[in-house]
Image 1 (tube, protein in one colour):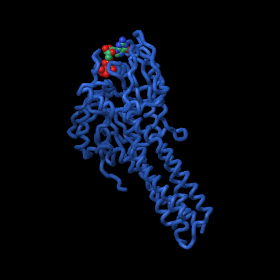
Image 2 (cartoon, helix red, strand yellow; image 1 turned 60 degrees about the vertical axis):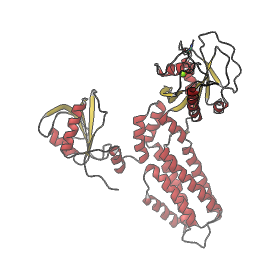
Image 3 (tube, rainbow, N blue to C red; image 1 turned 180 degrees about the vertical axis):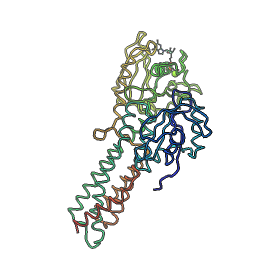
Image 4 (tube, helix red, strand yellow; image 1 turned 90 degrees about the vertical axis):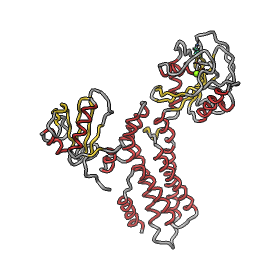
Length: 450
Ligand SMILES: Nc1nc2c(ncn2[C@@H]2O[C@H](COP(=O)(O)OP(=O)(O)OP(=O)(O)O)[C@@H](O)[C@H]2O)c(=O)[nH]1
Ligand SMILES: [Mg+2]
């Protein structure tokens, strides 16, 4: 690993007018910058109030600056944080001055990259920083915070320890081609591989939940034209987001909005009404509704409670189950008719999108349905991302291959190669492979075993 020797600088807050803006610099020049700009000693972790004067001595702003001495900073390097007034013109002037003093403009993600290179974060923790910045719900925040505190890293370390131990038992026999692995050893190795596969599957099971936390739980509003789907979306969003009219076929194209229910973020999608005899443009709208329904996690099936219920077309109804669907009887402010039996034991709520009645019951029911996606590993909320999923799937493939080789009693070297690839796949998640630790374990086994 090569460690960067230059000092990078960037604006850490969004460009725009605000109370404050924060500029960060990280690298070996940070302490010199404090002395040159502020004529103060770089006292670690002490916020100091000072004038910021540029290289020409022109006063730019009065600021609060904090120096962090390596390794006790986010990046693990000497760092400087400068809070100025939140005027983008001031922030840009300070940044330009830092560049004039020899800093380099930081690239996207470079502070986190340096934190990783300096061993302050593993890769999964660096990813958690991004998740934390983008978290939109309590659950997403909890998962990001736990990952940032090393939850996934700890699970991977446990799996890697067991895999190294297993690998060591196999490697011990590589130098003795004439000897088969004793039956008892084979059984133990097989048991260990099974444990590794079960625990890998446990983590893989959180993959879908991870996507839901990051993108929102895709919740599609379906129903006949004029049932009040767009009115319901507006109620849940809390503003007039979608056009509403008494004319059936108002919504032609789907539209989506993020909402929060309980600790979850939902991606709510309003769709074109399912008219059994659609005009050409409606037909295209319904085609899009069908595409949305095929990828939905949850459904809100809106029924006009004042009219006989039409059946849903089969290409829609095939996706609906009692677990993923909430039936919403709308227009309950008007005289309603007796509902006809539903095709499945769906959970139902009565609402009026017009008078905003029954909304809390509906939100509670939605939050409960959303909670069924949550997968905990032990006591922790784990939500792996696509990169972790790919590595774990690769590891599982190798473990399954190793299991087959073990059953066929093939030579230890081939078995070891599969286990080693699985170990490397595990290591990709944290971004670290500890060759020294593997060697230590191997030698320990040689001494005892042979
Ligand atoms: N009385 C009453 N009228 C409602 C209620 N919800 C919606 N409406 C009315 O029903 C009509 C249709 O509402 P929309 O929300 O546009 O219905 P939609 O299901 O989106 O209709 P399409 O987009 O055409 O499929 C409008 O005139 C609404 O004001 C309700 O709870 N009570
Ligand atoms: Mg509509």
